Image (cartoon, rainbow over all chains, first blue to last red; front, side, top):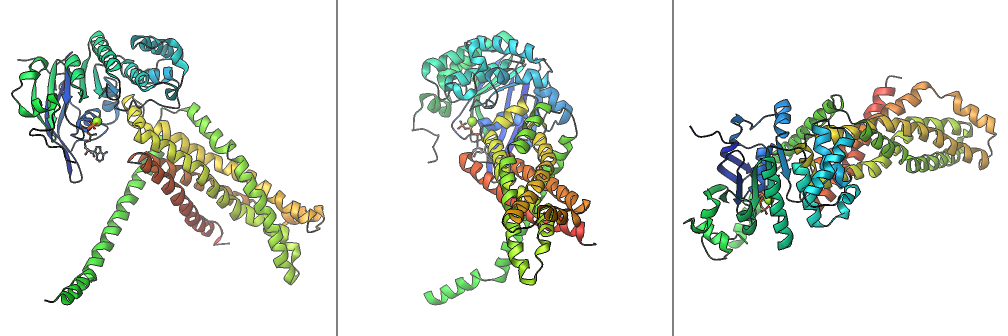
Length: 255
Length: 275
Ligand SMILES: Nc1ncnc2c1ncn2[C@@H]1O[C@H](COP(=O)(O)OP(=O)(O)OP(=O)(O)O)[C@@H](O)[C@H]1O
Ligand SMILES: [Mg+2]
């Protein structure tokens, strides 16, 4: 018998009216592994993560965490589940009315009932882990650059030592060097926690760096899934076109 | 078929009673769907006002924002409303030598109707708009989603403190507005219309009952609930970036203003119809 996957999606389907965004997504991630989902803009990558997080409810399909069905979980069981998750949002989603350290310590204070003083200590430690000096702790998010905000988002995602971390396009909008720094941080911090990660990106450099496994989503379905080192000889023309970033090929951009 | 004939046929089709019926049906269904969503939101919001965890610090901040910082706007509104009421009723009543009723008219209009309704409308512009803009921005920048992923219920963290603060603070504001409004009437009555101060004050108290004031405070509470609810509802459900947030603000202010006026009529009927 193979080990139970940490996170498993089976036939997850989601539509918005006539817009069929997810048409039966199947993925599974083993404990401690990192899966990167690649795919074009608007293919439903963020929607997929939001379904797992319970921010959107899938129309159909099953989402299992540690073998337990979570689609449609509410109340207490949803709360328990959320404590296992950390999420880095595409746009950062920092609380702009709260100072940086309260942003980072938010989950600790609200979810786990940690005291303010203790949360501040942990927050500063996590900020240091993502390469930010303690003096930013008392600034507001609007006073930081985009790259620094991404780092704060990362610090917030890992603050409560989650078992599963989701990264929604951690490197978009950053210069290549900062992107590489963030990639390193993601690898370091998730390995450090022994966390399982599910990342989304259309940045191939990032995917190569973070991923143990890569899956490609196209038109709401996973069309290829495999080992990260096999990505260059996947034998799949969609994947080839995507990693080359070529305008000609089976993927047609709807303009 | 000639072109002309085709045209008439088309026009006829355009006017077919079935079509308009379909349009009407769609409108009605749409309305029912949004009413249902609003109702669900309201029920959820009220439930979360009364179940822990509570956030006293956030509630305090809203109490101050809604109560204290609305004072200048509401105070000015009340002052000038009281003043103009005295002036208008004096010029009107002097036509049938009923000038003596000015003080009574001022105090009854202010406490029963004008203070709660005008304070409600001013707060709809000030608080309703800012709640819708704040929650709307939090929605489109995914901060509301982020709250959920950090084990915090956005209803408890964002909606409940605002609803409670609105419902509690509007009566306080209106009580102050009552006093200021009556004072405005007094200023005009005494310094411009030449009433004797004791006489004016006596007339103010003479016909005023407990119910006049308390009914106004109940109304205020209802309006505070409406304003904060519509602000939260529209902000929480806003979509499509900055444009969506703008639309949410407009809808919040317009719908709460209209709801205030409608609710006011029915509350007045409830309080005074039998008397
Ligand atoms: N709340 C929503 N309501 C309606 N439609 C939505 C909603 N969220 C997403 N969509 C639609 O789902 C589709 C996929 O969106 P999604 O955000 O998942 O794309 P994505 O793959 O993350 O793209 P990107 O790489 O640009 O972030 C889009 O067509 C979008 O319009
Ligand atoms: Mg996305």
